[in-house]
Image (cartoon, rainbow, N blue to C red; front, side, top):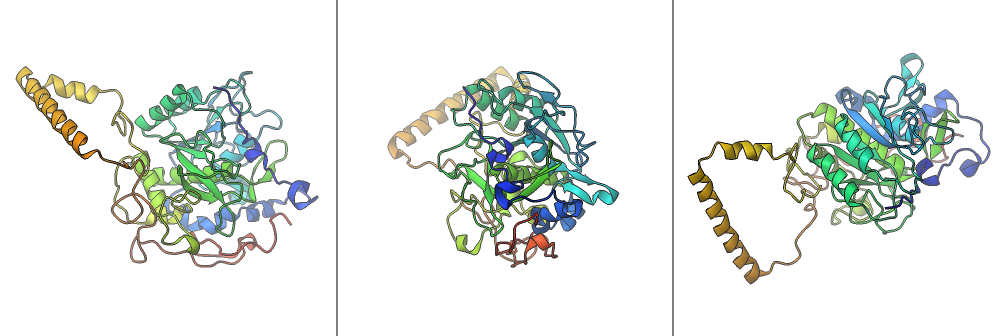
Length: 436
């Protein structure tokens, strides 16, 4: 297949300086942190008392990541570059800074005394495994990069890019490989504002993420469809850069990074949950604006709602299905499956008579099932998860009480860094854009 990637520099929608706000000076260190409005509305001070992502590796399949950036130094593993020209995965060249930006939103730790300056990620103690690809490579594929990430310790994979071409069998197999090894794959839905499925976000088994604005509305350029599961902040996002130390951008790329970071927080706190169960916690604690309350979920624009890291960390929820909101693998395998060794060892312990009896029983059962299917002819089989509510995966699971969903109160302009409850989103747009 050919690559027609368009999400370079957060979908080509970088809004630094004159492009959006007119000519503006480089933001001061204090202003950079103030510009990170998602950290304020997420309530990170409380979140980080529960989890910082420690012990979790997040692979960033993207442009190479600048491991020498002051806000990322020490958090970036060696990784590997799959660029046609080679080169290290932790040393970007020139303008290719998209991977650095995504890494900083996930695991940036800031710099200076107490890490008070620069960009801080939502999971600042997570490690970044950079997997360099060329987002414009006409013959590229993410199949080998994804397998590399899975085989080198990643528990979450962030893929903030989109492809207009069909997914190759090798790429589908790579996604299945990730799922069989209990790795959560997160991808951005795309920046076209259309319902045409964008890949890899629409590949079964990938957690697709769209972008929201500061007023809880879907960003007008966020691509949508039945595969979208979550929204996350994606407008006026401050992140680390390469040519310029910091950048300001819009895009579903940033939204996917925030969901990947949330997954890292959860995988650190709940190491025994499967990738699907981690996704389950995110969709069951997602937030919806009042206009969407009572609507059937998942919605093609909102999915199950806006990711809420605080509630995902503290809410009491049953673990649920190992696949969560993700479709089951066709071979029926789940966490850690795929090698068949368990079945082989079990069969070795059975006598021939027992095995023959089991085979005969299975054949008989298949005959009965075939008859039932021919008579009943079931219609409209469901491919996705059921709507929200307690006991299954889906959207918000009830109101109030211990572990219940708590609606977000209205909050003042987060650009002013006024305090708010953990995970509380504002209900109105900011009075002025960041950086001024």
